[in-house]
Length: 132
Image: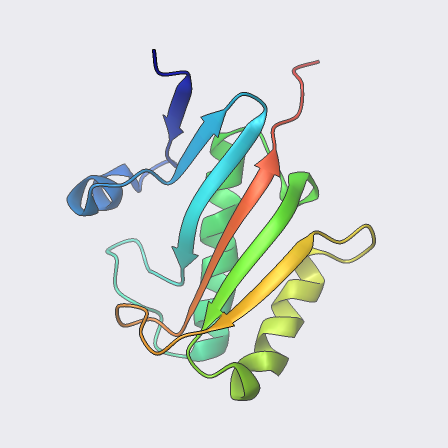
């Protein structure tokens, strides 16, 4: 018996259906969010790197919201970078806005050679807050 639930942000489910994966899976009180990239509503990448990173974080926020979560609920982050050394400053600027104070989530950054036309991807695990 399956005890997990697929979640999708408003207005983007069609993009996930085309590629046959879920934006996030809730299992118990944990939310496993698929990698979010800086894609526009039509699925195309933001051309400028800084805007692409911000859009990836915005897309992540939309997935979190669909599950009743915020950035405060994130416990683990994995990011993928096509040029980590050159991109570090831009990613840090957006990251600092998303996580302005301790406790910060765990974070693993991975350098990669290909992200399907994107230069940055972020995936997270969050704890879903209990309903009040």
